[in-house]
Structures are given as C-alpha cells and as structure tokens.
Image (tube, rainbow, N blue to C red; front, top):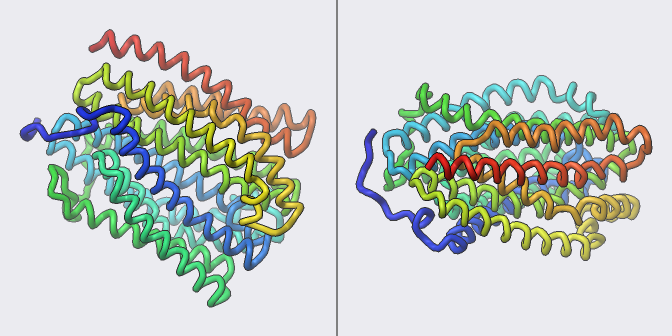
Length: 451
C-alpha cells in the first residue's frame, strides 16, 4: 500500500458541526442550481408555451429522466465511498485508481443509456399512460435529453469525486455558471427561435456539457495526491468490484424509488392534463426539501467515510447525531415556508387556476410529513459511509418502494382519488423511518464491538 505523509484534513479533525455545515451549504446551493436546469425549462415553457408543454417537460418525461439519472447517481455513490475512504487513509495509489475507474464507468454507462433511452422512450411514455396530446412533445424532449446523457453522467461522477474528497465548492461554482448559461439558452431557444419543448431540452444539454467540461478540467489540474489523466481512464478490476458492490445497491434503491414514482405518475396521468401539470409543478417545489435532505446526506456520507477510513468511531457517532438534528430543523422550516406560500409558488409555473388549486391540495397532503424522511436519508447515507449498503437497500425497497406499489394496487382501488394516490408518500416514509432507526442502533453496536 502506497501512502504519503499525513495531510491536514478538517473533516477528520475539525469541529464537527462546523465541518458538516461548511460541506452542506455548497452542496445545497449546488443542488439548487442543478435543480434549476429543469425548473427553468418548466417555468419558461409553462408560462410562454402552455400547460401542455409544462406537463411534457415535468410529467412522464421527468420521471423517466429521474429513473435513469437516479440509477447512475446511486451507482456512482459507491465510487464516492471508496474514494473518500482511500483519501481519509491517505492512500494515493488506490485513490487514483478509484478516480480513473469511476470515470471509465461513467463513459460506459452513458453510451448504454443513450442508446437504450432513445430507442425505448416512446414505449415507456405509452406504458405510463401519458395523455395522447403530450406524447409527441414528451418523446422529443426525452430523445434530445438522452442524446446528451454523457454530459450528465460526467458531471455527476466528477462532482461526486470532488465532494468525496471534501471539495464541495468547485461543483457549486461550476453549476452557477452553467445555470446562468441554461437561462440564456432557454430564452434564446424557446422565446427567440420558438423551438418550444425541444429548445428547452437543447438548452439543458448545452449547459450540462459545459459543467461536465469544467469539473473534468478541475480534476485534471489538481495539485493534491489525486489527479485525473485522460490516458489513465480505464477499469481497475479490484476497484471496480468494490465500487459496484457499494454502488449497485444504491443504484437499485434509486431505481425502485423511481419505478414506484413512475407507477404513481401513471396513476396521476389518468386524471388528465391539469392534474399531470399540477403534479409536475409540485415536483419542482418538492425538490426544495430533497435538496436540503440530499445535501445533508452527501455531507454525512463523506464525513463518515473519511472518519471511518481514519478509524475515528466516536467522531462518526457524534457527526450522525448532529447532522440528523440539523436536517430535521431545516426540513421543518422548509415545510412551513412551502405551506405558507403555496399559492404564490404554484403561480410561478402557471396562471391556470385549476392547476394551481390541484397542486396546493397535493402539497398540503405531503409537505407536513417531510421531517420523517430525515431519518431515512441521514441514517442510510451514514451507513453507506461505513460500506453497509445491502440492508439499507432492502429496508428502502420494502418500506418505500414495495409498499408504495402495494398502496397503488390495493388501497387506491378502494377509494380512487388523487389524494389517496399521493397519501402513500407520508405513510411509507413513517414506516421506513422506523425500520431505519431500529437497524441503525443494531449496526452501531456491531461497529463499536468490531473496533
């Protein structure tokens, strides 16, 4: 094992709450600007093209995009755990092998999903009961998006590597630049050239391409113990096995999340364009919570991974408690703001009174229960940091995914309504959070016994 002299690492040595927040805020802001890519598309097409375009960009097409990108993001999280542990242990050779293997995985994955997505987009949209008037524009948006999926994967893996190494600021800076570019290109393509939904997709692909180039350039110019070299991008068998072992459960967990969401989307689509548009708009407001909780999740995974590599178990336990408390406090605040300003927020996306009314009813069912999901996000992310991925995947797949699907097929037929459909979110969150708390305390005892 090749190592160098110990490096100063605030994540394994600094004040815990300060390090978590210092890592959290750039991730939160970065996630915010990443969400703006699609949100801006939706606002512009919703306000200037119509509610049909809004539903096309954010409805079935959005769920399919989330399925594919979510799977790869979960898969690449395995690379992030391996990289953070090697960085915490100051192991230069394994660290660099992991980085180049992760890039090779993103290249291979993008080719596969580009071809598969373009070929199957129409079939997937029809399977989801996409309204006929939305089918052509949704299909066009998907085909363009999948054509540029390479940029999405490269950015995700590159920014994930930087965050695993403790650098959450550079991905933020790049996203700010690229989000501004996306706004400019959206206005040019949609308002200037009148390209509608296809213009929004083209603008997003161009902006993501710039972000992919910037994050790759940063890794190539590093002066730390890690450095990306294009000539060294290849699969290292042992490293790939470790990354897949840790990443596949996360990828499958994300797939099951999104499959359940796709089934829910199909059930929502039955209620027509107004309901589909309202659900699409709510998805963007809902993203505020997921940005917060997801940012805390990435922060605690990196924190736990590096401290686990450094053998600091007491620090891990303290960090998890602090992170969970912060996530719950911020989630409650976000929930209050969403409820208080729900009418104004939906009005950003559309001026259709019926769409706004339906969206506000959806928000009032789901938003008050956000705080329960904090246990799932923080505990599953912390467990990932110590390489425990299989049991959390099983808990999530059962508590969230299978239970959601069962709800749609068993409960909804008893009392069919849009409220019954989306009520499955808070019910399954509560059940799964109980399972995670119980498993975490069991795992905690075993970790301390083994150290």
